[in-house]
Image (cartoon, rainbow, N blue to C red; front, top):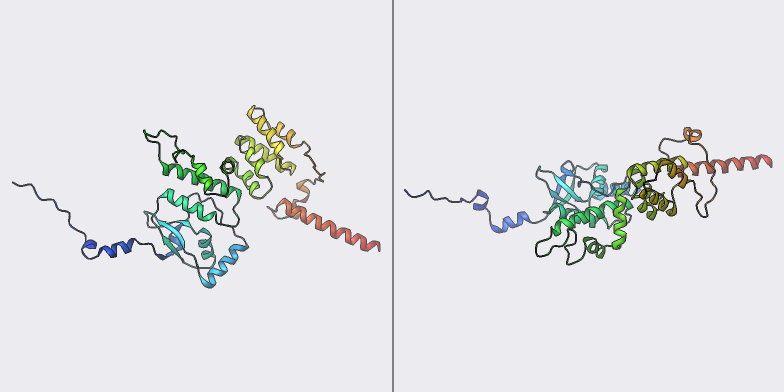
Length: 310
């Protein structure tokens, strides 16, 4: 008896559609997608700040809509992973919209990482922490895309780009040098509170890079001293802290001693215990705001004193 004939029957879509229509179905187009179905990119390194620019964007979206569609890729659960357009999505939410225009693009995770980083680097302001984690994600994606070395080319992972490292390749496409990219990535080793101080401009970039070599417990001890003394370390002080850390001698007492050293051209500071003034300010008020308010109050006091003397 002859073996049964195995046939692969065409699907209904194949029977009642043309090749042109199937190609058209795969073609990218702008779609209106509900905001509820759009998920943020995993570990998105760029902040969506609720500032004046966001308020202005929300007002613009409410008035004329989103002019530039976002970019996303479809997920297996039917949702969409937002690759570019996190600020536009937030503006739509603030404007009271339920959906936004999106270009749905077929991309691997690594391709999406590359696109996400490059599109966000076009912003006018990119914080140090944003650059740090973005560069790290970008390099990790490049290394995975390059793949592990073959037997014919036993090049270490991350250096499979015609003899160049992935960081060298990235530097050629960036405004930052190879060394500067490495420094930015070092910032990802800072504890969040210290990294926030870098973003706020309270700790300079180069000292922050050196601080990243301290152990986490050492960074936390330094943070306590910074808050207690209302002072941040100079590059010279940080280099001393790093040396003590490498020798295994960086204790809270040593940190306190180094931080109390007078810096070159350091001006004298008048200190007021925080407990005496905290009741006059809302929780979370920045030290700069506190200082500015006290100075203005003293100026008003001096003006009233002069008026009385007249």
